Image (cartoon, rainbow, N blue to C red):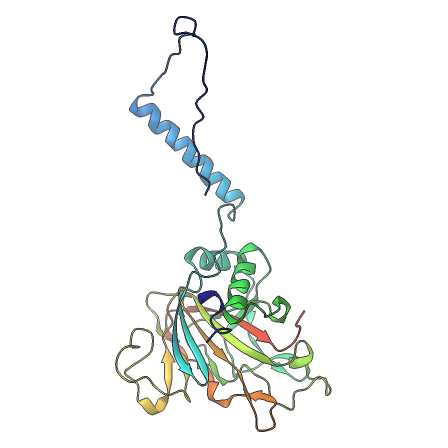
Length: 294
């Protein structure tokens, strides 16, 4: 079932006609007036204007949450990496940009005492608030992984913006074993380690150059079947680079069972947000934790 991929590997309006016992002679005459073309056009314009005004007052009035509107392609089984087409709808992408306008600040990286600024990551980012649209996206990500996954294991949605020259050097989304709650490391204080990651492309400029998401330790695909979404002109030994395509996303698991049976970080999902050579990119991070994040 698509809506639990990882867990498993409006109204119709009518007109009521009333019956009358009156004879034709007893019934009152009814005059039906049909508007001319100009009048009909004016009526249509008025209705259209009212619809626009209502949409401006409440842009979510007509929004319907669909948690299974995407298509998937398994890129790798171990580690599990899945490419998702149409993970974020056009309306959702526009909404995310609208509600976060003016809220971006220099991106941080997780440190022992909390988030810190680093030259390792030069983008700008913002945490997205909760509303019907963002809740739908989070629920889509939850169901994608498992119906049994508690919603409070998910971190808030983060948007990250890349301009020319900006990047996120190679890194893991999981945290090292030495980062523990016992030693007070801020990265795992809420919910422990990150089980999985989604990176979705919210907005990509038409003139984009660079800005791919590179996994240097993943095996490059054979043949040209993946060339629409990955860079096929790079050497196979360089790994895999997913192209930034609006609406699409990459999902991967961050942890693997170690020799002692404990879940540890999977080094194979090392990745980077490559530098933007031209244009811009707006991405979205969704992370799931082992335990309750809230």
